[in-house]
Image 1 (spheres, rainbow, N blue to C red):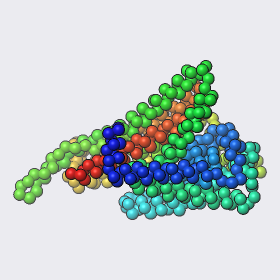
Image 2: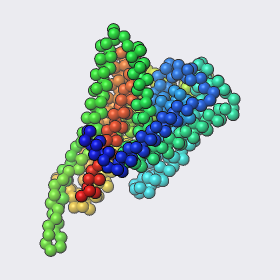
Image 3: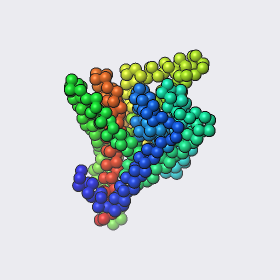
Length: 425
């Protein structure tokens, strides 16, 4: 590992990309500590500690909500917008055709996702501020209309700023920018969480904390195992006669299919969808309409049930693994490219039969990968039920995101190193 880091650092382009990303993360963390006026931070902290769902929302935003900074929403609106458009590509054939156009079509969809982020950020900031206004902790010290409008537009501008920073990071090709921003927020909150665990440590709970440590190790090993595992499909290239009777081809190769092609995306998507109904319900808890307030309280109570929450978390991670794999993996294109290059899978006819075979293989692989990833996702919740600590559920989700993002970034760095090594020859 250290040899790879040293090799990456010795490449000027990769080294500059590292320094740029580190600089952007410093800017992000600096912005996360610029609080908005008219907010009682101590009351806000007590409010989040008393609500597990909003604690996960704070985690998902990168710890920016707990300080109610200028980037309080983090990149959550942009992720929600991306989810909406990816779902729409599965529903509307025109969007699906646009996505298949390649880079040009993807740029148009990304541009629409950015535009949708603005109204979503306004809506989510308004909902968050309304939740804080209706809480019993008296978080907002100013509630006049002009101040509320200023807060909404400031938080929305902060989200757009982070979205821009995330895209700048992605352009450096050493990791997904949005995932790395979430990663930075989680890592920045680790010292505070460790200190809280140290303060609440009790020698009578040594067994419980040992169980937590074992769960953390299993989570790391599980995520690494699923992310690194792959199925190699044998590919044979036909021998071809070229000019002057020269033979080419006839080379045996393989097509690697990763067990978890979606990476950390299913986890982020699942958390986003689980948080959305709770946040909306918090907004309607104090509604004057009785049935609407009852429904909101029912949604919050239902999702605070660990069994229901864990089951939904597992199912969403499972479903999004299949969903995102279907978006990034196209058996028809792979089969077409193999046929154009004179390649074939032994025992499988080229063309449509090859695409059907690859689709069947990836579905079987995903069955294991999605089940394993979902099981790892809910494992901290099971341990939390045994030990009764709320910090473990949040910590387990943090661990999942951190490990997945690190593995994804390491792979991109390795590809950069390999590319420069080929260029050197």
